Image (cartoon, rainbow, N blue to C red):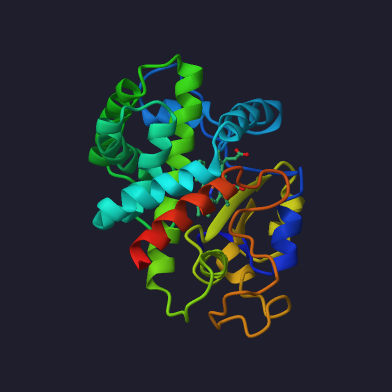
Length: 284
Ligand code: HEM
C-alpha cells in the first residue's frame, strides 16, 4: 500500500497548523547561483524556514511596502481596458513595470513569468513539469533577468520570486471572479467570496519536524510527517460558514486562501488591488 499524506480540512485545524512552528514548508534545495528556476526556488522565502525564511521574507515585504496599491489598481484597470484578452496576465505586467521593466517590455516580461511560474510552484492538480517545461522556464528566467536590468542575484531572487508568486494565483482569482455567477455587488465582496468559494490556491503542504506534529501516526497508511492542508475544503467548513456551498458575496467570516499564522501571503493587498482593477475593467 502506498502511504498517503494526512489531509486536514477543518477550518480551525488548518488555521492552527499554519501557526505551528513544528510544521515547516517542504524545503527546496539551495544550489549555487545560476539563472535557473531550481536556483530561484532555493533562493526565495517561500521554500525556506527559520531565520533564512525570516530574512528573505523581510526583503520581499520591503519591496511590497514600496508599492502604492492605488497606483497599481489604476494601472491594472488601464492595461486590462486596452488588452482585455490578456486580463489574467495584467497583474504581472503591472508589477513588472513597478519593478523597473520598461513599458514596452512588460508583456514580454509577463510571458516569461508565465513560463517560470508552473515550474517555480507546480500546481498539485497538474502533472509534474516536463524536462521541456524546465528548459523553457530557465530560458525565461534569463530573459526576465535581462528585462529587470540583470540585478544582483539576491535582488533578482526577491523580484522574480514576487512575480512568480503573483502570477498563477492572481490569474486564477481573476478567472474565477469573472466566471462567478453573482448578482451585481462591490468588487471587493466579489473577490473575497471568489477566494473562499473557488480558491486559486487549493492546498498547502507542510512537513513535521516531529512526525507527531502532523498527526500522521494517527491515520493508518498516512505518510509520516507530511500533512496536506485542504484550504478549499476548510473554506467550506459548515461549522464556520453558513450555507457554505452557496456563492454569497458579503460574508463576514474569514477564508484561508491567503494562508495564515506564521507565513501568510504578504502580497494580499497588492493581489486584491490588481485583481480589482482588472475585474472592473473587464466587467465594464
Ligand atoms: C490571489 C492571489 C494570491 C493568493 C491566493 C496567494 C496565496 C498565498 C499563500 C496561501 C501563501 C502562503 C503559502 C504557505 O503558507 O505555504 C502565499 C505566500 C506568498 N505570496 Fe501570495 N498569493 C497571492 C498573490 C500574491 C502576490 C500578488 C504576491 C506578490 C506581489 C504574493 C507574494 C507571496 C510571497 C512572497 C509569499 C511567500 C511568503 C513567505 O515565504 O513567507 N502573493 N501566497
